[in-house]
Amino acid sequence: MIFDNFQTFKSVQWTPKVAVIGAGPAGITIARKLAAKNIPVVILEAGGDSFSDESQAFYNGRTVGDPYFALDETRLRFLGGSSNHWAGWCRLLDEEDFRPKPWVADTGWPIRRKDLEPYIDEVREILQLEPFQPDAPISTDIRQVQLIKSNAVRFGTRFRDELAASEHIAVVLNAYVTSLDGDGQAIDALSLWSPDGQSDRLHADYVVVCTGGLENSRLLLWSNELSNGAAVPHAAALGRYWMEHPHFECGNAVLNDVSRFEIDQDGEAFFSPSWEAMQRKGILNFGIRLVEMPYGGVKALVANLACSAPSAAEWLSEGLGQRLNAPRNCIWPGNRRRWPATGCKSTGPCATHLACRASTFTGEKARLNTAR
Image (cartoon, rainbow, N blue to C red; front, top):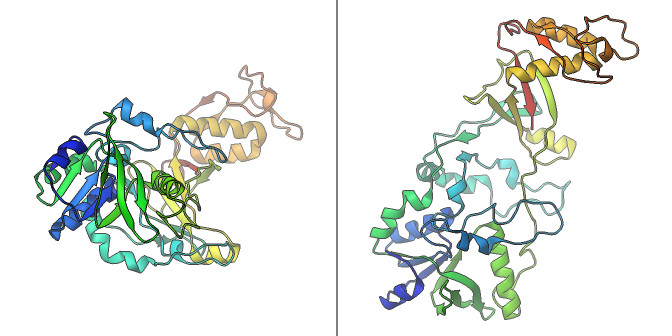
């Protein structure tokens, strides 16, 4: 069942046992599992059936501290939640991610990777993923890892008909939960607000908060503020341990042997450190993304290298089968090589003109990659 607002839902006098806040991947998945056990569940979605500027504006906000994306761009407020802008990339958490790491305070989860493994096949079916492949060691320090690029599943689209036909699920759109009202022992009720200005309350035996990492914390912190800590009595970690995926462009690399790992259809490969390397160097887990550089970028890289390290550029251009022309003005002190002038007037590293032949390198297409 799908209702356009809370008043319409209320009029049918349907009593849920569980209230799920948020109709994104987590909320819809939990509701479907409960419904399979004939447990009546209501999903309260703050947004509508599709995107609207009015609903999305509720996600506007200001961040302080670390720079971050605009808050109304990182998540979506309508049926399906942020699955509506998911790119379809997916990777299993590593076993090392769950382990305590004595060199970094407050690391370690109360569960382990093995606790999740019984559910992996079901996750693959929901997200329509190909089978996961084991990591492939490259050295004692580095392993190649799999990052699946699937067709993104839009939960609101894929499961809408199932939700609408279900006798055990009621999806209520435009039902904004403003706070969880508790007494320090349990949640008594949910306070709701509708776009038409009406307020109401909902009672359920159990409440599941599935509004996303940012909104979960905001909603629970605000509920504690209103109830003097009665919504989440033990809240020492609530809103803490902010996690993001910082990205850094580390540089360029010339690889003359790519036979030791696989490059996907997009010209990319992904790597992570081994557990032994993390322990030895006192670091956390991270990912390395190698991106194959377009041919035009190869030319520019070799030309820039000619300005700062001519001997290396000559070696590289010979290996790639390039014919390099660099201006005299790019010759740095200590370099006595004479290059044909091309009209460039740069006095430092620059991208110069190149006359190119077929690019080959040890029998392979030249692969110059950007590590991120």
